[in-house]
Amino acid sequence: MRRQPWLPLALIVLATAVAGARASDPILLTEAAGGILELEGERRLEVSGFQGSITLRLGKVGELRFAARNLQGERVERPIALWLENSTLRIVPVDDAPAENIRLEVSLSPTLSARVEASNSKVHIAGLHGEVQVRGEELDLTVRSVDGSVELEIERGLLLVERVAEELKLTGSELDVQVDHVSGAVTLSLQDSSIECNHTQGEFDADLDDTDLSVSNATGRIRVEANRGSLGLSGCKGGAELFLSGTPLGLYLNEGQIDVDTDAEVTFEGHNGQLNIRGMGSAVHGTNSTGGETQIETSRAEVFLEGLEGSAVIRGADLQIHVKDSKGDLTVITTGSTIVVESPQTAVFITNDFGDVRVDNASKLVKIDNRDGEVRLFGMKGQVQVKSEGPEVEVHWVSLGGAETSSVENSRGDVRVSLPLKFRCRIDASAPHGRIETEIEDLRVSDDGHHATGILLGGRRAAAALKKPTIRLSSGGDIYIETTDPLLGRP
Image (cartoon, rainbow, N blue to C red; front, side, top):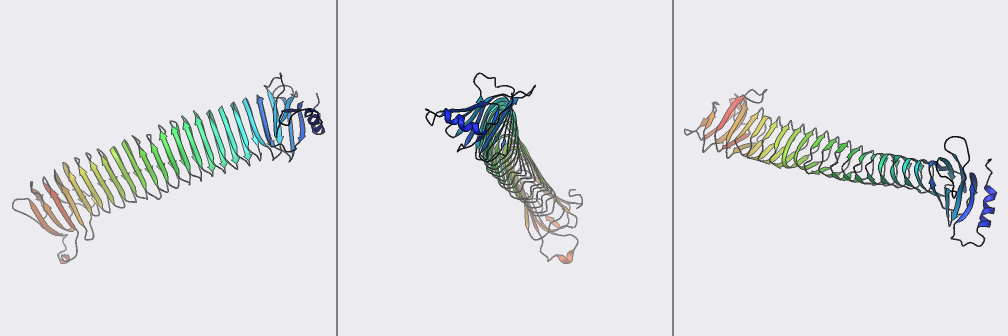
């Protein structure tokens, strides 16, 4: 059968069909395998009921073209029905005709919006100017270069969405989705799916169950509620608000304030901005943040931070904390935790009950309040203030400048202090319930061994009048004051 042009026929069919009919009644314009319709105020196209391949693309202004044939096998034309209802055109199967194995191609005027309902089909939509809606199941769907908004409701399928000028809404389950370059807002409601979103500009809102979501290079603020699955943000600049349950989180080179409420692991690298993590049993691993404060609150987990340029605050209980090379002030407030801090470049403030604390190679103020645990400080180069109620406090200085006062107090145990051979400082030590032991000649120990005072001049007697730092030691047990090789940082 040879397809006949249908441009003038449309007006004849329309005139015949409307005779005696109300304006709101559906009108059958034609049943044909193809044709061209000149539009007269129609605003919307709906396609439904087909299985196979459906293509909608941009056509000429004021015109609708369509063609239908077999999807496979011989090139056989397949009649379809074109209806008009109010301002909506509908393309549907002809009554009693099979709707499977069909290839339908439609070119739309830029004045038309489009809606497609299909199942077990491959759907391709490209270049449309109006709103696009797609509903269906078992779809291989591609939507490209749409100037209007896009709304998708799909169950099971493969989706590719690229270059959408306005809002994107996606609802569905069991989907594999790729989204690129959306200028408007993005709203997701997904289950049992996997989705990658790149270069979105508007607000981003996702409600997810058992879904893996990756977002990169987003400029709008992101809000995600997720139950299980996984979440990754990379290169995003608008900040985020994340509520996660059983959903591991990865953050890489993001900017802006990110607030996280989670019970799963959080990993971040290179973040520039405020980062607030509130966890329950959530391990946190972070490296190389470039600015902004990092606040972490969690419990029964490991916290590892390295190379953070901004300040950091860690709160919680039963934590294993390891912080390396921090460049901003570090504050730790915990109970029942083990804390290790290596090579901090600025001040360290630690409050901990029922756990041990160790700090290595600190060059600025180290202030510790610890109870029922040991405190060990090695390679100190700055002011130290320790208040402890534990078995032992151990402090090894390699240098100490200025005129600051350092204090080491352990009301329930021993204090052990090591100083470089040529250290210059003033020492005042008191052990009212124990003894003070030292071999430093410049220190005078009282006859009962409970007190010791003296000025260490480091072999430079002529400099005695210069200002020196002061070290005050107080112990409920014994005090040991030793000298050390400054290269080793310990006896």
